[in-house]
Image: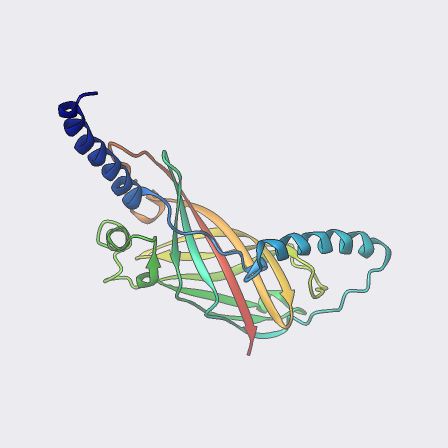
Length: 241
């Protein structure tokens, strides 16, 4: 390649590389979902915990002596909690995090129908790793945060609730209630795992909705296809009041 061709080629290459990184910045995923069950654990610790969990499972078949856990009473969603939206595109799955989550749970083990729970999510706490994209998502085309600064969930029913809970043992339940985003309310069911541990409740849950469910258009572009389904994931830590 002669010098003249090289001088012509290098700027084009730089433009293409720069264009790729700009495209990736605005369309790519920059947020990882934190797992509250493994919060603050290193990779080595997670591996050790898995070995210990496997050993514990074997031992529990021989000795069912886990410590009972009392869920009765008032619980509060702590600041360590987050809610995520996950959207699949033709490029990758993009996660959006909301860090302002609050709410109150009043659990009644003897009369489960008296159990109450709600959650409130601050829309302006949005973080997708890209400030311009955040402004776009919470703008008038999608979440309308200025007019509707909060999304809410109000519990109506629980399925598969155990009558006995033990510390360190995960239970799978279904939580059904009303999810309100903007001025639209829809009944949804969260598939939920609950882990009582060290006098707190850790909860992971997810459900799927669509853009249409809440009056939003699919944000596909010429360069990027977007699926209509949106996965909502709760990563909650509840503390007893």
